[in-house]
Length: 163
Image 1 (cartoon, rainbow, N blue to C red):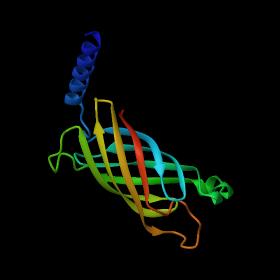
Image 2 (cartoon, rainbow, N blue to C red):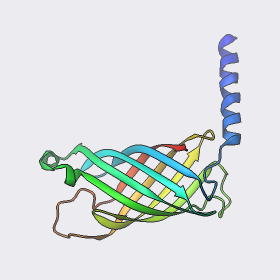
Image 3 (cartoon, rainbow, N blue to C red):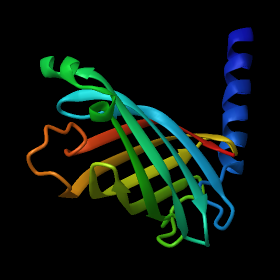
């Protein structure tokens, strides 16, 4: 019986948390994300920060670092493993009438390695914490002949926080 009470309490707390979360609040809203960066040649970490400029527009920065993967990855230096991006998002959760806890955002990014796009989604379980996923793809590479692990489709999965 005690175990059942604990389960009911946890479910009630989660339901309360779901009801009070909001994915994107517009101007001044700030999000920090950290997660795994998954790609064909390497797996690494990704961090990003977004700042709301208007009701549905945000800008920010994103960085990824490849930790390891294919056998030739060990020969790469810091510059090969690291990428930094300026990003622009169109936060469409409220435009397409999604749940207020859910944000869907396509965007563009300009990085040290390429010009590309991304498509992401965030879901907040509470006012400060949620999960995200983001697909990134290059549209134009700066150097076609370079062996660059950041010039391919990547998937980011992780946690997101309201600041």
